[in-house]
Image (cartoon, rainbow, N blue to C red; front, side):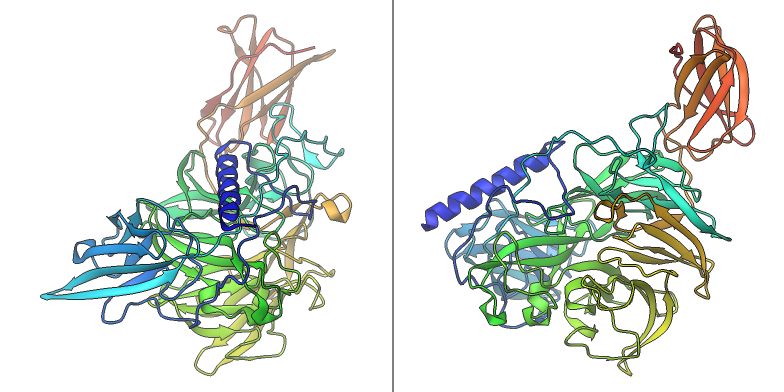
Length: 629
């Protein structure tokens, strides 16, 4: 294949991906391996992706500037901007970028809204395979310090988008989903609560997929009854629904997009207010799409999100193919106000390919070597960030200023002694707790390395270089949560665990005793409902849309059903009826009995419902309908 043909195929694939992602129904997902419908571009053989120096500092010598792409790296995207963090934009001057093939690039130096740096955004992308040299000057007091560094642009190997994105939905099996007369478009998973002995107050936050019913961010109450759902079109999926804070107010955040069968996300992060209005769509930068694994809003109008991009790579150094690909997992810090990338940390630049527990032997452009697989980012507030990498079985403490790993915990290159039972395998969601301990969801497989998946609390002593078990959280039965999962510490000391691939979510008291367990409906195991993570939060919301009503005449009068997707303050429902739409009077008032409440009354030609709060005030009015039947 000629170089020009390769470039043409690569351009066609990127163009097809962009077109698909911009269409509303184009984002698709397959959590199970399916037949691939087109062949990915296979770039030039023996393409290097690993820098000569692993774990290099991103701070340029004699300056305060931390830069991205990393000096000496080989994994920059053609659409990369050049991030310069650590000095006001007014002190950064004469920035230029020159490609060894494409030549000089015009562009703009755009400041971060935080006032501590700027990105040079080229007007045109760089060329795959070329070396880019960056030059500029940094003013510091009366001094003007020149700087220069270079990086290499990778050959992207984009994963093909599945073609058939509009297949008809199968009818869910009886009893598998919650179905509502007044809101038939909502099909949340049916839930069986098997244990409930004093769970902390709060609703359950999920994003179910894979099983029957609709996909989308979903809130349930502790009985498993639906509170709110945003059903997504086609095969679009969501993950990681939780409550965060933005500008001092509670918000919902979640990821949604396309998930190829290779197991990462290509989409965007959504932020919605307490009226469920989506007011922020946060995207990854540098030509990437936001990944599904983790997201954090920070107080300074920044956001942390994961990114998975696939690039061509020679894997012969780890006994893999020379003509193959690697999944270069990373995270970005995004300036929410401007969309600029303030910093980017990539696994290939900091962790050797040989540290992986995954095998590179059958890697290809279409099935790249997923050697690292970052799945959680926890900014610690002390100048460090804690991340978890599934496929090295390791946790990594990073220096926020230099990007360098300062401590490795677990895996092949652990710098601490692992105590009995402290080893993890394929773990997720490493989170620093208030007392300095770390909570982890230890998947233990797949293949299963440990007897069961578990929540794990460990004490990591960076000075003594030890890691010891504080507490384990296990269900009575064996659980194979081979992927996904999380552990959440609650304010009262309890623990909430989402079991990921296994369709459970559970609460344990501070001593580790199981006090709440729920199981989402499952058909044969290969089609079980999954939720990447599960959380519990207290939530109050006021949706802007009206309540919904459905009604059917019967021999004894009329049966009406009332619901209000997302409302949290409804205490009772009042049914109104009359001979004309403007002549409705109360027929019956009944307590709210879950997401949908049935109301029986005498038949009238026109009906509507009113939602009442605990004080008996009307907080919502439905449209007026004529009952069927």
